[in-house]
Length: 456
Ligand code: GUN
Ligand code: FE
Image: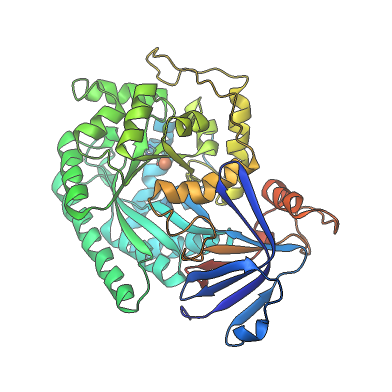
């Protein structure tokens, strides 16, 4: 199945940069061994050349576009997504989230939940997800297996938490380190199986300290050493709410300057393979330090509206050279699709024009000048595809359609029965694309490919 060849003929849409919606009409896109072999205007080429392939001729209401990269998703929280939206972050963790995550000590519970989640995300067009699982090694391995079986590209972390957590959902420092290293070995074994088959790895391990309050400095430092030893990705939360920033400062006032960025730096976790969720209350020198380290921010605008009393200053960060992508933040946020997340990113930017907030929470200079760039639907689509790929350092592999890149793609049809918006035949392709982004949903997603394999 992996070696199936495809030729698509029709409209190909992607965002090679934040301000460009590239629309290639009447093109062919040839996919072989999971990669894009050729993209060119169809002209008068004879399609008979491609008789050994699956030929897909797109209609006037259809196009292909890159699949979504969700940089921040808590797999066990899918059980609560869409509920528990009315309390502040730390109370939400205590009351709703830790008890739900603790249930993943039961592998059967985890398998059922994660199977539903991965199926749902693929149906929604998310071809790559970076997951937080739970503190449980076995359930985290199950998540990795499900992603592999269903064919989703996945970055998967076992959550690490050795303090400030309830008795029923906490681990010792040693357990946390041992199980994190075992997950890394386990996923690397899975990767070897695929390499033998000549196909790149789909599943990757991620070192995942939940956030600084639930981690001792010893745990953070040992995780930093593991990140270096195995050269693997890192993820955590950073500067998400004023309460969290104050909590961290109270806990560790003398590590760095007692702020998230300095503590991650001091413990070896501010790496070029690190993605930090939220990044709201960041001072400019912290944004610059993150940019210089090559790490990235996963902006989760729906969760930010619900929890943060502030927003990621996305284009301010990108202007300063910090990579930014988007995340659903299931289940701090309610949406399992990246479409509402992109819409929220656009709204968040508009909101910044009329709401001022202190990003530093420490009276540091804060309000970004953001007049010359606009986060519109194109910028949002870029963030949800190539921007996310850049954050994970895989933009040479996925995120847009270029020869030699892997084919992680969606087939969109804007003329489906029962869809959420109406179709007019004389709408141009850019209009159709924008309408789908703003008013469409998974009913318009009629095909999903990861690495050239049809997975939905
Ligand atoms: N900070 C620590 N844990 C969490 C979590 O599960 N969700 C969010 N949004 N923030 C966190
Ligand atoms: Fe989160």
